[in-house]
Amino acid sequence: MDLATLSAFKPAQYEEAADSYRATGDMARAAKDTVDNQICAGMRNRLRGEAAGAALQQLRELSKNFHYVQAECGIVSTALNGFAFDMALAKRKLDAALEDARAGGCGVNADGSVSYPTGRKLGDTELTEGGTVTGSTGGSPVPDALERQAASIHPNPHYGAALGYANRIAEALEEGGDADAKWAPRLRALTADDDPVVSARDWADAKSDTGGVRRAADTYLDTIAARPDNGTPEENAEWWKGLTQEQRADLLAVDPGAIGATNGLPSDIRDEANRMVLAETRAAYRLELDAIPKEPVKYALNPGYPAVLITPDWQEWREKHGDRKARLEGALKGMDAIQARFDSTGRKGLPEAYLLGFSGEGNGRVIIANGNPDTADHQAVYVPGTTSSLAGIGGDINRMVNVWRVAEDEADGGSVSTITWLGYDAPQSIVKDSPFSHYANDGAPAYNSFLDGLDASRSVASDAHRTAIGHSYGTTLIGSAARQGDLNVDDVILAGSPGVQVSKAEKMDVPIGHVWNQEADGDVVPDVGRYGHGGIDWDGPWTVPSDERFGANQMTTDTEGHSDYWNEDTESLLNQGLVVAGHGDEVTLQERRKAWERGR
Image (tube, rainbow, N blue to C red):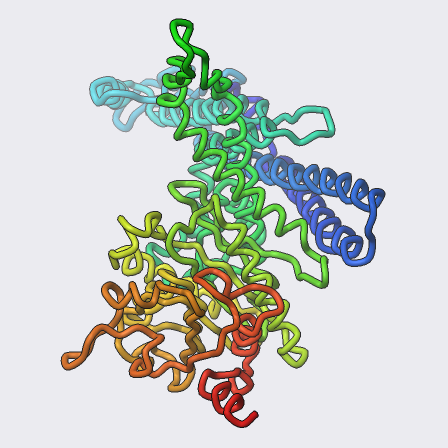
């Protein structure tokens, strides 16, 4: 980079451009939210018919455009801030060298060389003419030592100082050139298609841009206070509060996965971050699935005798691509279910959803809330059990939708947020995996941290009434969370529990009388659990929450089997909703039902 270019560089102009892009991204975000949570929500709640459906589809496409604009503007803004920062470092070094050269009586030429005046050393009788030196950026110790030696023996005392100024100028110009060379391809790459359709390739490109900008902006990002190492939710919340709006926006733009996974941050921030991750992951999986060769014909007639055989081509295809195709299709099905929940906002009054955690890795992670937990008067955090994964998350999301509807009706005007928490590696096999406790023990600390994070991200003065809900192996995780540490809830609901690792309800780390259990007719899991995850006293057998000696409130159920506790218009669901809404005193218990039946 030449002297004139770096001297004339004005970082503020690029920072102002970054601010403009960020403002545009903020407007796109606001427009997206308005489309999703006001316009579409209102239409779903009031309008029906083919025309309404077509209009909603067009609005969803518009929302995708706003979302993509938001993401790209965030990336461009961070890139401009990073470029301005790197160039400003070089410019400050250059400006300081130029000022020192002038103060030292030297002149700086257009090519960066430095001219020094005549002079003589102390003790010399004759003046030595001035001259011009060209700087270098240094290198190995030998040339540097030779340079220092030459400066010390030179008869003109200004030579050494001039050489120092020239070297500083050369180093600044080199840093400026390096910054320009680093950022030029990054900034040129930040372009988007000019068509109005946001495709999977657009989001894949956005993900690539994000990674490139994050790597290039490492020096700039290092100036932002780092997240606390293994910080508590409270520490995370304080860190976030200490950042400027610009710093928050830049971190959200280039590291959404980390921001979305940080307990204690505001729910709307985590939602924005995780929706970015969801869009990018969905695009990557779709492109990968589309790249898998078409499945060959599976069966063919044997030409030698009348029989149907599996073709060799299909066998080879299955070995190479079958498992991966099935996993991608399952993951995309789960992501479609998450999107379907977003698209249900407003239907029968359903509040907006908040994606508080998402990952496509392994069996997947999904944490999604109905309503904003940061302001809700009542919260419920549901843990699903064995076989739970991203692929099947739709059913678990719908269960908490049903709980929200009942609890909202029973909350006496209070607000409710119900959360599906698949934040752990659930056992994937009833036979091979579910008998083991390590899935619960490994996942329990993450559950406790999430619950603590709901306190740290609270944006209103009042505390929330919080209920933990577990199904099947999910109850074992909740029990492990209670056993391992502070289970930060007021009530616990257990449904179809195989045991919770403790033998008494009083050990569940909630007030006495606030552990609730359901066991439906035909649900065999509690019986099976007596040989696995039940708690045990020194003088007693394995205990599960359905046993009287455990001490839980046994809620009546009118569903059957292991998976129907959340069916609409059932007493099983109503009882759960009453607990979530803080009306446990209205729950119908088994002994109350029996007494009522005897009195008929």
